[in-house]
Image (cartoon, rainbow, N blue to C red):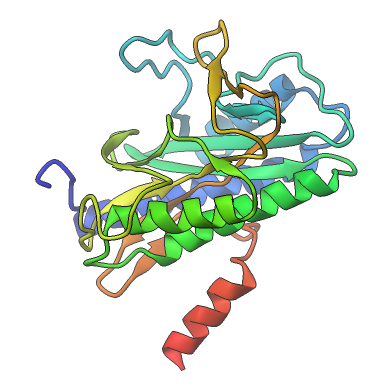
Length: 275
């Protein structure tokens, strides 16, 4: 337990700012995600916005965990059957594509990490449904967060909702603690059993970022050392927020003017609690 850091009020304020800025990059890039744009152009635009407008540092650029080559770009662009860590380049977005843009900025040493799905042109019913169910999975996980709850509670509701809808949960990648370090303890699994794993305490900050596959959960790694795809070539979706455990529940730190609203069932539940 001791290796999970409890953030100070100053840390929390720094993380609020970084989280908002991370979300604002997604707001900024939204109108550019359309048929005909390359993933490399989206990366260039985000990079320039972070550095020149926000004065933030793109955390992924040259990020190099042990056993990896340095990541070469400022954002991750994962299209269709790419689960995560897609490297921006010459790929042109086509009508019906789905793409996850994963953005992490560093501001004054603090990391703001979030991602959103974008549906390009006229998406299929499957693409819309997969993105929607994944979004619900993320929010169901977020709604579990409060002091005394367990990390297993988060994974359990995500896995239940995904599998009930005929989808599968990627197991090799998970959410993570975050602060002045990009990836720290705890690991936040998106599957599991209620009442298991670490107990949550006020002041913890971590991401919830389920990766949900339309087909089977098996993955394959591409030769670039980063890109992860579904083994059965079926599409995958992911949504991500950074969450603070508060004294009474949770606070989503990666919010901005353009953030998609929580699903109705979340809003209704919180209204019932305050009523």
